[in-house]
Image 1 (tube, helix red, strand yellow):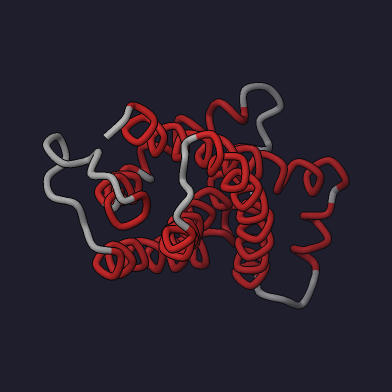
Image 2 (cartoon, helix red, strand yellow; image 1 turned 180 degrees about the horizontal axis):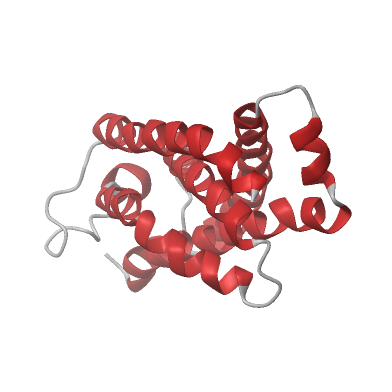
Length: 187
C-alpha cells in the first residue's frame, strides 16, 4: 500500500473533525448574539425538541461540508473505487450524528463564553468523542479498503458492527442532550 493509502484516511478524518467543529461553532453563535435563545425558552415547546432540531440542522450542514470534502479527497488520495463511497457515507452519517449530538450540547454551554468558547468546546468535545473516534479508526478497512488501524488499535471492524456500536453511542449522546439541554439554555 502506498503512502497516500496509509495517510489519506487519517487526513480525511482530521478534516471531518475540523469541518464538524466549524459547524458546531456557528450553530449557536447567531442565536446567542440575536437573543433567539430567549425566544425559544418562551415558546410553548420543550427545549429538548429544539435540541433535536438543532442536531438535525447541524448534522445536515456538516454532512454537506463532508460531501464536498469527499469530492476533494477522492482525486487527492486516489479513491477511485465508486463502491467505496456508500460505506464511507454510511460511516460519515453515523459518526457525524454522534459528533453533532454531543457537540450541540457542548456548543450551547460554551457559546456564552465571549473569549475562548471555541477552544473550550474542543477541549470538552474531543475527549467525549474518543470512543466514537476510536471505533471510526477501526473501521478503515470497511470505508477506505485499507487496514491502517490494525496493530495499534486491534482488528478492523466491519461496517455493520461499526454502525451498531457507534449508533449506540449516538443514542446515548442524543438522550443525554435531550434531557440536559433545557437546563443548559436556561442558564
